[in-house]
Length: 439
Ligand code: ASP
Image (tube, rainbow, N blue to C red):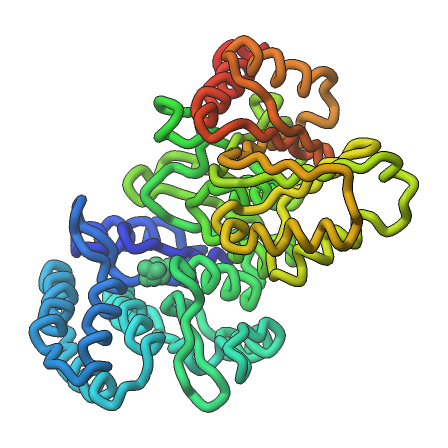
């Protein structure tokens, strides 16, 4: 068995956290490939090293003196090295980084040093080999991640290694220019490494014991999710559930490598398993609930719309012309609604309305704003009668007016539109009916 283990910033924020990580890795010899983030926050109000690096580089770019900021970053690392009692000196590394900042090597280069330096410390601490992802995680000239080439280079590079530390978050273009993924991107590196070494499991260690059924800012102490499929997770993360970077599932998904979200501060907790398929039923009919506020719905009415070939296409073409992506498109016989992000739509509103008028000559167009979308997701819903009925009676009892309903064709989710003001009440009502009273 081979495991790839990725540790997030809060798991590596201090020497104390590093020791927990060391114990976790040493307690299982299958944990052979380690992907660290940069040191995160040690306490509320602390600053992540990545953010310190961005701020420091912003000064360098303007030819301002950045040495005070850089010494603070150096101190963070030296504190960890001292706490772990390592025989390691990063002075030369920092000299090179300072030099490269002066040469304006780029924002991505600057940010990537957070993971790079943490990787050096981690490799030294564990006695593992250090692998610089700039040599094998590849981006093309347009800055887009090249999955195929990366897999070729990285699997070759790691093939004969018993164990290694590969810093997260970055790679490089063919000419050596360092490129990072988007924020939180070490999760993606972990997944890429898991694919390259054909790991049995990708363990993603963070500071929570996996995913929760609903947002803890809305539901007091929500239950955790034991097992979730990639498809369900896609639906939930799209609707705002965070923990894992959205793009982190792609490399492992095709390979059938499961991801296990674990808690560095409570390693005995089972956490959440993310898998391709499972015959395991979820504990409840629903696997999770997530949602987002800030949508608008453009409702178009025209008699005999159903028999007008190309009606939908013409409407959507107007949105395309103004570069607006739509989220949902519920339709009736003579009505069609297009749901969009209000913030993207608002400036182009009048242009789009006149575009629709010209394109399809509707009887009326009406706009509803300040809507929230809630996704109720669960592989268990397919086999269960009456799920939608239960959701709507729960919402009716909570005095929530449902403005839109959309059941995905996979029957994996039901999307409900409510007004922004009803968002929290709606989530509470749905959680309560499925998880608390388990009706
Ligand atoms: N350190 C980077 C960030 O703060 C990447 C990561 O932690 O995954 O976004």
